[in-house]
Length: 544
Ligand code: SPV
Ligand code: MG
Image 1 (cartoon, protein in one colour):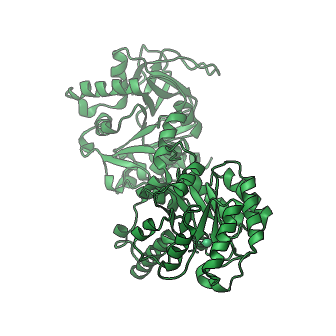
Image 2 (cartoon, rainbow, N blue to C red):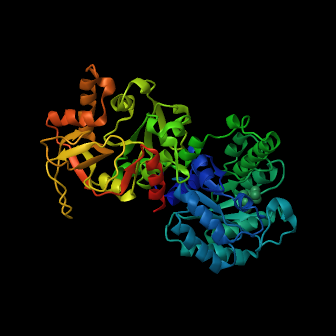
């Protein structure tokens, strides 16, 4: 993911081991830790057996299987561009297991493995170092040779770890073993000590005299100045377990605080922000990739006009606007918002007015037309102008409809598209009928007609023929339509009667300017709620 370095990981580790400069690698035990280690500036990672088993909550005694270990290593490798040297314990078996281990590590781009001359199953050297039997030298050399013979990349490294000092066998045995492992093909020797001072390691380094790169793990002799190791011609220092110990200390502290305080107020400033976590996970790269590879579907933004009380509903709307009346157990507006959500419309702005404080539906933004008593729909629409977008739906808040109507409208094309119900005969009409006269009547064919609005009126107009249908209070607008809207609102806001104007007035204004407003015909399957009768009807509608 962060692979900006072009040199292979195996090559990088090889250079760390062979360079005459002292270098350092730090322990990591999962993906996020590995990333943190790389970001801190380290040029390599130690895949510590102790830390990897500890993060699983098991002991460092080969309790986690080798495949569980390398599954975790794969996450660590994927998220970093620096090399990982795995603490491979004893190689998880004999020469044959070692061959398979090397093959699987190379497949995961792990740059090297360190094996120690103990017997399987091993235990951490600091727990039971002296009592653990060492491996037979020949057998261990065979394991090194088998590993070297099976690697495909010449730069893959095998580090041989000498436990003789820890196991109490003394310097002579340590040197004898190191020499044999070197002869067998080990790329470096790790000399381990559990003393609190570096004497053993420094003596060993002196005797070894640079026969091959030398690696140390100063966990116990940590107070030794690093300059001492530089002088002693050590090539690589492993800080072996400091990330797991840092994590444990921090987690113990924070978990205790949260438990005792039953609150997050104090800990928030002591922990990483959620954004830091996103960043470590590589969230930014994903959003860049999304803009490259995903066709951006423009989100639809719904504007709902819901400022009016619904006077003809009398006492029912005394304490709430009609959009908050319960229809079949749910507020009308909730039903509308649920329909939007079904169509993945998640940006919803509701213009409230009457008893605006009661409009408390989750998932919406509310803006308020404070002048609702003395104004009409266009004032409410103008209140939401800041929320206009290039893909928008404008709706009355008191409409119920079958889902397919909105779905079909969203797939229709045109700068502005209005939904018109061509079923005039049997439709019950309450409130403003919004009769609409179009360039063609609905032919009910499956072939899409291209029809435009000629005029909308509250009355059947003499001389205009039969209305083509009724506008149901649903309008879709694209980027061009949005420009028309902004301009029309600006023009109409200048007129003295602006406070009385409705959305049909605005549509008529646009038609007069020869704007082509498309018609999407439907045939029933909707209703609006204006009267007490409508409430019963709406209840039935929701049950059907
Ligand atoms: C590990 O990190 O698991 C090691 C180093 O083997 S040590 O714990 O110091 O032995
Ligand atoms: Mg270990």
